[in-house]
Amino acid sequence: MATAPITSFSPEIKGGIVAPIQESPQGPSGGFADMLKTKIMEVDRLQHVADDAMSEGAVNGATNIHETMIQLEEADLGMRMMLKVRDKALSAYQEIMRMQF
Figure 1 (cartoon, rainbow, N blue to C red):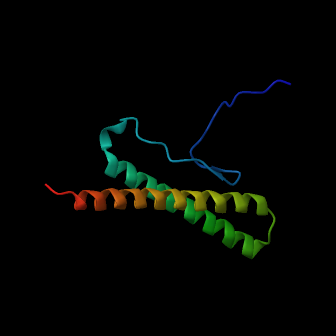
Figure 2: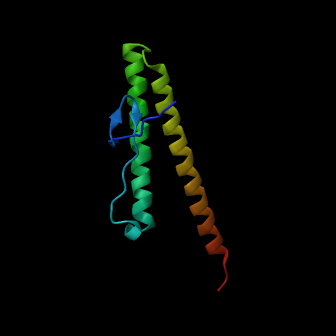
């Protein structure tokens, strides 16, 4: 059984699947704050897409319930990951504050 390679990928919403935001070609020169801001914006976008899918399902009926559930899970996973990063950053800050110089 032969498989065909993926030929194109567009960072848009296609068929109910949300593609991730592409990072800048400049690389890691932006720093942690810029990367964090980008990821927060991506999680926010995932939340909005999931909310829109839920609203559309409520108004038009559940025609693509599996795609809606996938979008909801993507938004949930993004939010959980963001909360883990926040918890780690807060823990690191508290550890630094406990240090004695």
